[in-house]
Structures are given as C-alpha cells and as structure tokens.
Length: 71
Image (cartoon, rainbow, N blue to C red; front, side, top):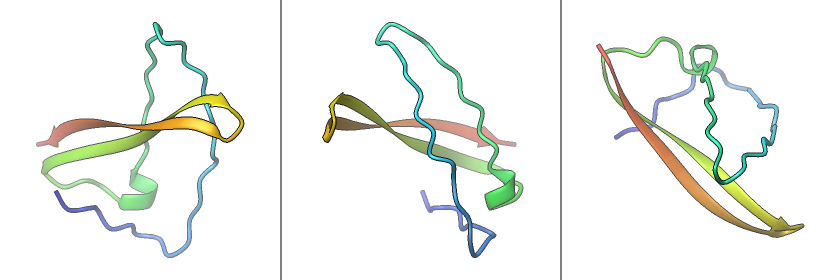
C-alpha cells in the first residue's frame, strides 16, 4: 500500500495519551478529511503506535493496524 499524501504544508497534532487497562476495550474515531481530504474508493490501512510505559524512559512500542474498504 502507498501512503496517502497530506493536503496541508504545515500541520500538527495534540499528542494526547490515553490509559487502557489490559482487559479493557476502547474505540477511537479518526477524522482524516482535514489532513488527507476525502478518500476515494479503494482499500486502506491505518496504523497507530501504542506505547506500553513501564517507567519514565522505559516503554515498549507496538503497532496496531486496521484495514478497511471505501466503496
């Protein structure tokens, strides 16, 4: 898959961390239109990094991916 190009020259994010217990489930809504525009028909994948903090400066990084189709 090819990364989707951004439509803005300059942008930033609020870097918010959320706690999630190991047995919990959470849902996260993505608003990508402001940065990427409308998605055309096709197959896509979104990848998010998850940090498992143990102590300051000591964490493991995992990547979670979700694939979806726009008709």
